[in-house]
Length: 483
Image (cartoon, rainbow, N blue to C red; front, side):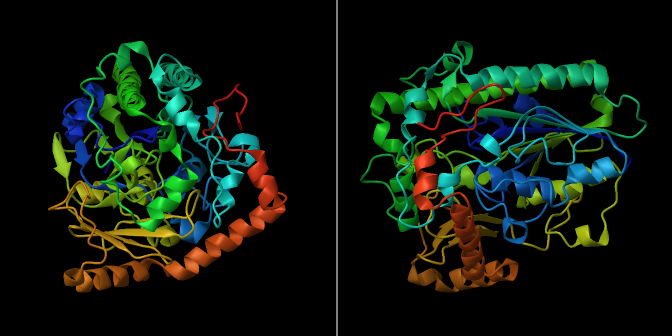
């Protein structure tokens, strides 16, 4: 394949069910729908850890968290593990970022030639309270999701507009400046991550009496798995919602999805206006999804399709148009894809990484591995380990009973088969496949050991809890709110 430019577009917390091209009957995402019509839409794409810092670390490095660390939102990536940005820069390719990275600091060498208006973790530390994994503290900032749900502007909508402006100017003025090699630009917005405050133009697209009620929201319908109870008890978001606030929150989230789509459309039009579309591959994805009230849960941190699955669309020269790829893929597949797009060969070590080039998968290659995701962060007392195996999703917990879902007959995951005696052989096969990737008990213990060391480093349990609950990372120029 002839080397081409690469435009990487990422959002934050975009539930893959909330796009028109993924079948949502109400959410309006015309620009992403058009991108899918021009390229390939992956129906079964996943993050490798459903929370910001680990998700972005795996996306950067092409390796699983159990191999590289960066377990949670209090243990940020700091450039110590080579990323695709390091590799492209090292091969002489212009590679820059605009917007959210959520790494430790600009003082670290994160691999980019330049980071423009980057959002990194607060104080170079991030969410220290999430390091506490036993006797879980109740998160004092959980009220923020419900309280933010409204029509209007926020520091996040302002920041995303700024990101879009920078990206447009880069494409107009700086693309491939002083270089004869293909470039890669990583544009990373923060919406639709809460605060759930949506600009009026987009909020009004979704009348409150027409937005859908969240799945299994009524308390009698909610699943009672202890992992979910741990999460909901610590991040007690739902205690601050009533019926009206739920509808406002859903409408605002939908509005932020449309706002994000509008920003993406502006950048794609700038790419075309600059005459670069025929020489540029475009990939859109999100770092993870959002529960959006389903099962009474908000935020991320579970292995349901709403949160562990992500949208993924790829378009550009040589790729089929209007294609749908049902092969299971995940963010680790992006590392070899970006290197291949720019014509940079993988090293022998990189060929042993778990990812496969999306170009090869689109051409029909079948990866030898199962898609895998793991979680070791806030609101959990045990690690969570997920694989896709054919039509099944299997979730293993060292501390609790597993979960199993048949996504072919039960795509909404309302029927947990984790203890169904008729499927014992399926669960055993799935567990065997999981253990080819890692030893869950060993990984769980290693993550908690690292987190315990970090807690002590920062003054002990009481000190990290007293620091407060951040809620969400502020954009550049704004002070963190630990209340």
